[in-house]
Image 1: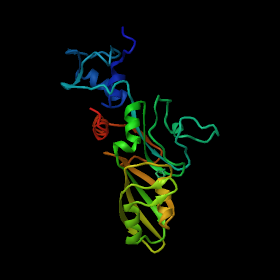
Image 2: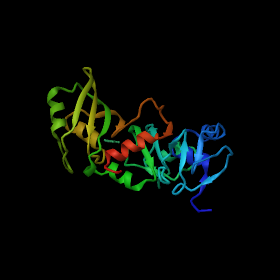
Image 3: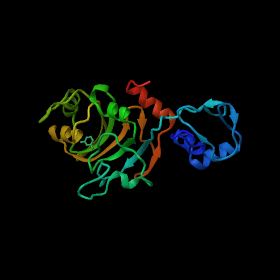
Image 4: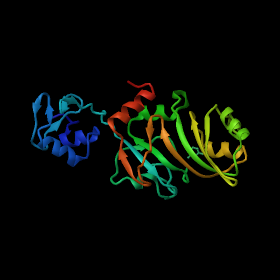
Length: 243
Ligand code: URA
């Protein structure tokens, strides 16, 4: 038995087919084949690298031995696996200790979409500006943001670590005392959105990330997580030039 072997239902669940329980049902319903053979008993061990697994005739691509998770990060959690100061980390929001790590960083007070994976190459590409993956944010800022401030944000503002790259900014709601903006950035410097908005005179009151490349936060409740679907994983890989 190869070392990498794992139970079929776990393999299917990890490949994003459904929950472990749903995958057990698929097996007992006779919808799963391994190397062409119909499998209806639970617990068969498969080698993700070598065995061909099909559900309803479609080959299930193992996402390597990688896991991909999205979390709707609430404010108050630090984006790290372990915090020397003992503050709550995003890992505390995941039920068991999966072997994943956060992709890039959200500030402690930033909410929204955080990806976690153990796929180092994808994580690297998602975080590196060279790969130009767009991150989309909703920022509630102080004051009424006028067209001139929007233009400045879009064209690039000078921060203490250099000018920012051009980005797209949309006013979603404008009130006399605060404005809701959507910003689409292709770089991710430390506290970049907060510093950009501050630089044009509109400090951020609340910040949320709503998309990373093709993956949208959607309606995932605050503090909840879910595995990415195979489609989302494929789209992220495509967006970073993998596969
Ligand atoms: N920009 C910020 O200022 N903070 C974040 O957490 C993410 C982007």
